[in-house]
Amino acid sequence: CLQFVHDKVREAAYNLIPDSDKKQFHYHLGKVLYSFCDGKDVGDTIFLIASQINHGKEWILRDKDLSICIAELNMKAGKKALDGCDHKTAYSYLGAALSLLPKDHWRSQYELSLRLSFLMSSAANSCCQYDEAEQILRRGLANARSLYDQLPSYLLLSQILQAQGKVKDVYDTCSAILTELGESIPEFYNLSMATTVADETLKMYEDAGEEWLKSDATVDKTLLNTLQLYKAISFASFFCKSHSMVVYFASKAVQLSLSRGICEHTPLSLLQFTSVVTKDENAVQCYRIAKGAMSLRERFDVSAQIPELYFNFYGRI
Image 1 (tube, rainbow, N blue to C red):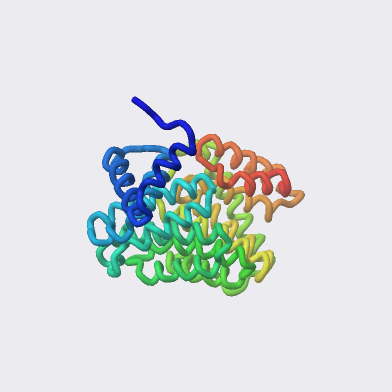
Image 2 (image 1 turned 90 degrees about the vertical axis):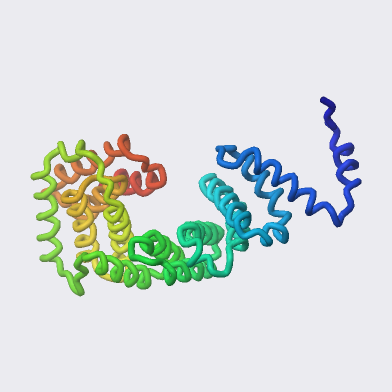
């Protein structure tokens, strides 16, 4: 089998293709690659396939079924780029995916639209395009069919608002969603009330015992989202409310894990709690709780939380 190995030879051969036919050439090349690789894990080759086939957008849009398939291909490429922290590349592929969806995609392709909306907003947020990220999210929230479908978007929205320093908006957003989830958000909390809820939480932890740390992980996805909302509102309340409110939210997050199960967000919840309630009289107990929280790193994938975990453990306990 003969191969051209010199770049100039390849370039000369490519230049033999008329400019008017080059888009179609790339498109057909992408389709051939796609036909061989469809349904397979092709690794980074997915970027090559998507970039080639995207040259033929005008032909793709003529076939509704093909448009959906290529939108999914671009979404996978975008997700892979996001996972690799290549945010600009992710933004490009996810934008291509959105452009291939039909006008009624929220009705005809609901699950794909929901996933793609979240990923596109994540990419825009990572590229510091906060206004666009928020606009995409709010459009997705308006079209979501249930609160459960909205929760990941509300969590991302709180991160976008936080990145812009809009802590009051973060607080109001998290407060409204936690209320919808059945959580109690007090209008006022004083030092005496904070001391009481912290002591109650410490007692609950002692009653659960160290064996609680070895209990089965929960599959309650609502709990996972709720703990993240408590984390966000705790951060916001530090700036726009009072220390007593921070203690309340940190305590409630731990109480939820104690009553409903352990998950990957439990370690940070425990560390945030101990970092705001540690006193001379309970320092040993809080340190033991913090050590237990750090031991959960061996059970869960907490790689995305490592900076916060280390900050709370080594910087504040």
